[in-house]
Amino acid sequence: MDTLFGLPAHSLLIHAPIVLLPIAAFATVVLAARPAWRARASWWMVAALFSVVAMLYLAKDSGEAFEAAFDGAVDVDRHSDLANTTFVLTVLWFLAYAALVGYEHMQRRRVPSTAGAAGRAGEPIPAVTYGLAALASVLAILATIWLIRTGHEGTDVVWGGTTDQIFGG
Image 1 (spheres, rainbow, N blue to C red):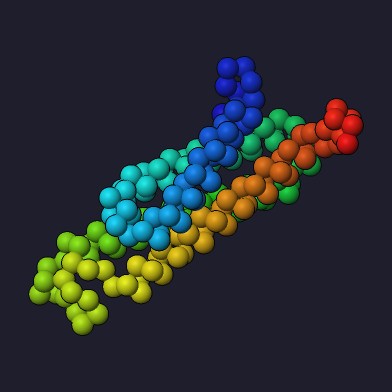
Image 2 (image 1 turned 180 degrees about the horizontal axis):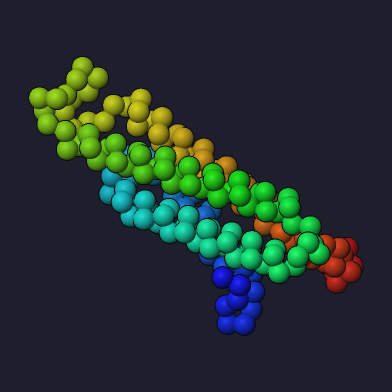
């Protein structure tokens, strides 16, 4: 996807992940700390994270098309590498959160006769739940940090020293 409405698609598509990824990261950390809230919002949050991954993919894909249009005239290798890392971290975050929600859902549906010594029927094993919640939270924070780094690098590539000229800095 090269253009949208006659404009470079990348410059339009990056805005959705820039806004939604940090909001989803905040929600992940809050829901990791509040299991009762997580139970109510579980599948909605999985769907929201999936949409963040999809929007990030579109932004990344359009960025690659934008890069190809410059044909090496602008060095965007670092920006591209950071974007790839951001995407991988976000996919891992989605998988960790989906695993957490899936695990808790399966444990709540578990039959009483299959309950082990680690917990009563219908209750998730705390170590697994806490581990997956912590992993999802750490990945959410890392994805947000890498998104900021990616955006900063991309802005630096596009604007370079021109902001100093404009604002006299």
